[in-house]
Amino acid sequence: MREFKASHSATFEINLYGLSGATSVIFGLYGAWGARFFTLGPAAAQSRTRTPVMSSTSFARRESVDSSAAAFQAAHKAAPFASKHPKGFGEMVLVDGVSIEKTYLLPVPNLRQWLPEEDQQTCNRRKLDTVAEDSVERKSTYNKIMGESDVILGDIRRNDSQEAVSRAYVRAGPRANTYFDPSKVKAAVVTCGGLCPGLNNVVRDVTLALWNLYGVREIYGIRMGFAGFYNWTSLDQKEAPIMLTPKTVANIHHYGGTILGSNRGGFDQDKIINFLTTYGVSQVYVIGGDGTHRAANKISEECRRRNLAVAVAGVPKTIDNDVDLLDRSFGFNTAVEEAQRAIRSASTEARCVPNGIGVVKLMGRSAGFIAAHASLSSGDVNLCLIPEIPIELDGPRSCLDHLEHVVEEQGHGVVVVAEGAGEELLGTSVEADAGGNKKLPPIGAFMKDRIQEHFAKKGKECTVKYIDPSYMIRSVPANAADSLYCMLLGQNAVHGAMAGYTGFTVGLSANRVGDIKGAKSSD
Image (cartoon, rainbow, N blue to C red; front, top):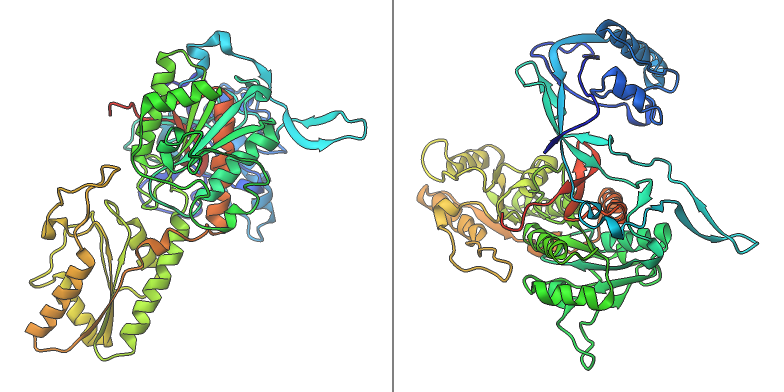
């Protein structure tokens, strides 16, 4: 990581709005209402004139902290959101000991670093797919062009015990100049691994961004994962790449799955590179999980070794929402919504019989986010078991003891268990799938049997209904929130690749989309 050039050294003010206690704060923003709060010193604030902190206030360089604080105070008072509030928001309070003096940026590799001679330095003028009466193509600039000083702070929660240092990521978005000449770009899009709500959305949004924003006209859709780069011949075209156009992707976001198909395994670096060189592909968009991203980084590193001007961009996909550094993964919200259907069914079944117990197994190999979020948001779950917490089944204050008391009190109970929970009870399988993932023990059926045994030993009757929605929660179309998120990911992956970034992934961090360097293939 390198130290960020722009100065982020400042003592700043934050309105606590009546909160008391430890000096722990969150760097936030008013968003659409105007006032933004960043850890920017006067110099940095001055350099951001294209995005003013307040439309009615311009920050000039000030030498003292007091004058800087006064400026923030004035901005706060003049904020449209604060002024429109019937009671206002009062004075801002200076928080002592909470500051950021240095920000270290995690840089993203760029083709300009080792192939400067291939840099086309094309002015990034957004292409509009319309033609004027004089047949002259019309183009427009973007609303905001990202520069080197546009970053996302990785540590927005602060308190007075932390060092005045923060990490940062490159903020995603269009750049002033593209590395590639868009008219010469050929791109490839591939989906790998398991299904996830929103896959079709990402494929569609990458295609539309390439076609409508940059004018790219050759976009290969690689079929059935990495093997689709080579696992076909001129005589057998069943799994040959398809050409992606606005017409072919027009309505695919209304359906689950992926129009390209997906598969685990099949990675052959040399054969994939051979496809890229044979067909002149200069941008590869890889949509997949951690294993897929490791493979994508191998492609990026090999292209660099061979001095190939190929940008490799990743879009992280995991229904389990267990991607480090990111706020969430696409498809997760949809999966939680769908999981609630199973929980409601289990609750209904349990309520309608004496001592009824509904057991629902949900996806979550090594992280229980789906199980936890679905349980908490449903309001119907009495016991939730996740991989992060060891399960204690027997004894006082154990899981089964708790469930017994719940059934005694309300006449029924609902249990949710993540598929990866309980390895300490059932052991770890030595078998693995093509993607290297170990097969999981049947924790759902195991819990059903143990619940029945527990109640039988106590001489109590119970009726246990076991529901396993399994792949149903991941094969549905993305909901509105995930659809919007997929659009942000797809478009910003294209912006990053066009700028020459490679070996990176796009994702939401601190509620902003960033370009984040991928791990080395040896990791």
